[in-house]
Image (cartoon, rainbow, N blue to C red; front, side, top):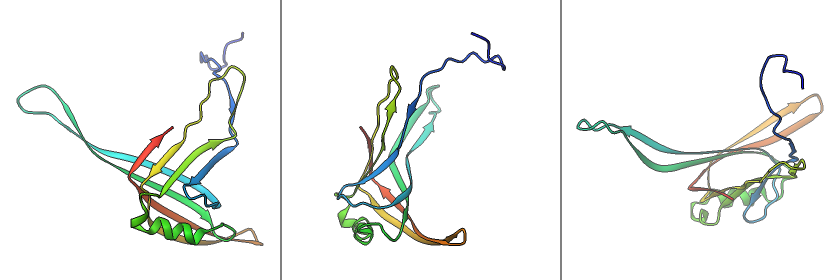
Length: 154
């Protein structure tokens, strides 16, 4: 086999096709979601005692944030979704799951889909945007920011 033009020694690892991802809402609402972003962080403090050479890490609680973009209009049950996820008393049943769909691995390639499950979800902020696309299309969309308590992967 001929060498790479840049002299890079690289092996081809494989390929797959991914048709997209789906956001599942625990109560089955079908929303037109256009963007989803999950951030899950925990505080970590490093310290070094004065009486030894060891270093330690102390970890704190996790902090999760989900940001969604949704099209307003034909989305089913958008008002009910916002009402439920804005109610602090509903966080025990407020779950958002994001997972890839339509994965088609090539023969011989290893591939396993992972679901990200956000539990204890609460709506923190909502913004509405109206934009003119081209000369003939107006789009009304919403940006929603949520806090969540726990992130699981399956």
